[in-house]
Image (cartoon, rainbow over the protein chains, first blue to last red):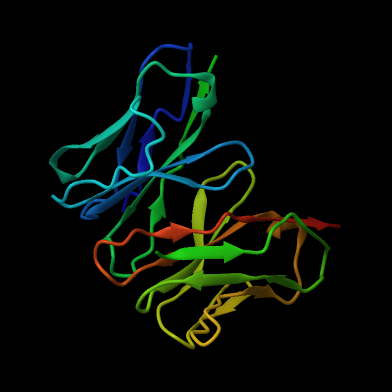
Length: 115
Length: 113
């Protein structure tokens, strides 16, 4: 079966532009996570979705960041008015069900470069 | 809240040396524990896991035992190879609904020939 997919794989944008990053989780997985990984750094939690519950947005670094998950499947992470410090790899992961000891399955990531 | 602590890197070893990367956790209840690995230029992938106390996860010569009494999940390998050079992340998944998955900061391992 297909794993987690993300698009685009690379995105170069100019400072001040808006970008949208897409994540397709594994079919049937109800939990979806977004992380950010700056060069040589660990994982920075951004947001997670679990089924129809309100998402946990506690990791979003500013109000320029937002995310949606439509129909309990595909998710889009939007960064408005991008800044150079937003440059990083954005990782998406899905899990069969949050909170029950299940592992996360990661996508390949989207490398964002803000010039 | 739940948390994971890992030994700070980078860790540099010679080929065939013994590896230990320490991981300890704080959690309510009985979480599942994981080690993820990220090879250079690649995404994260699961290396091994353990879902209850005293379980031993193993894969590719790596092992880790879930020790509830010491709240630890140390990663070990008897003889490392250059190809093991990567960043290793310890993580926990709570078994209580409403709590988030937690990753440690990662430990970079470099194995020299």
